[in-house]
Image (cartoon, rainbow, N blue to C red; front, top):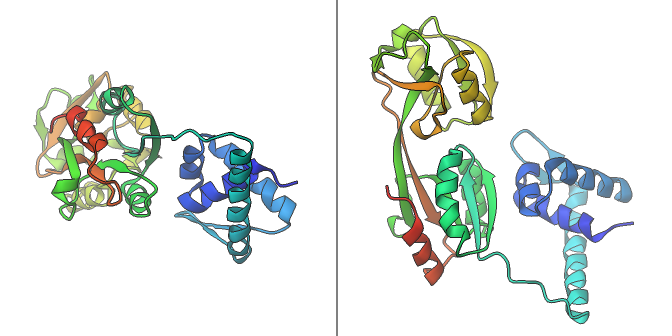
Length: 283
C-alpha cells in the first residue's frame, strides 16, 4: 500500500534530483530515502528514477506518476485542513550551505540566525545550491561568490586564501613559503570536494609535480585529520585548518575564495534579509 511517506519521499527526490539533498529536505537519512523509493518502486512494479553519478531524473514511468503523486499530496493536505490540522508556517528561511565550509564558519554564521529564525538547511556543491535557488527551492545560499552575482542581493562573509597544509612535525612546517618543486616527492591527499581541484592539478602538473595519493575523499574532515597525523599533505582554504596542521604558501599558487550569502531572486528584500545582513560575519 502506498503511504504518505512514499509520496513525500518521491516528491522530495523529484525536486532535489539528488538522494543526499532530497533526504536533507525532508529530514531523513539518505538510506531511509533510498529504501522508501525502492519500496515505492516495488509497489508500483516499475522504476521511477534513472540514476547517474551526477543526478537522479525521472523515468518515463516516473513522469507519468508525478502528476498522480502531486494530486495525492494535495488530497492529503486537504484532509489535514478538514481535520483541523493546520500546518505550521515553517521555516522562515530555507538556507543552502556550501559543503566545503568549515564547521567553525557554519557555527559562527548559524548561531545568531537560529536565535531569530526557524531555518531549514541544505548542504551541497556550488552548482547544486545555485540550481535549487534558481528553482525557488532555497531562499539564500552561502557559497563562493562569482563575478556575475548581483552585489545588491548578497552579503559578503569572508575572503580567504588556499594554502598547502602539512602536519606540525613535517620537515616543511617551519617554512613560510616553498617552491612547488619542493613538493615533488610528497604524498598527497586529494580533497575531491575542492572547488579548484582542476586548477590545482593543472598548477602542479605545470611544475612537474605528479604526486602519489594516499587518499581521495569528499570528506574534508577526514582529509585534514589525515594531514594532522602525517599520512599526507593537501591544499585547502585557510578556514579548514585543524589542530596539529600548519599552512604554508606555495609560490605561484595564489588562489583565493570569496564566500557570500546570496539571496535567490524570489526572496524579496524583507525585514528577514535585513536582519540576516546584520548578523552575517564581516568580510
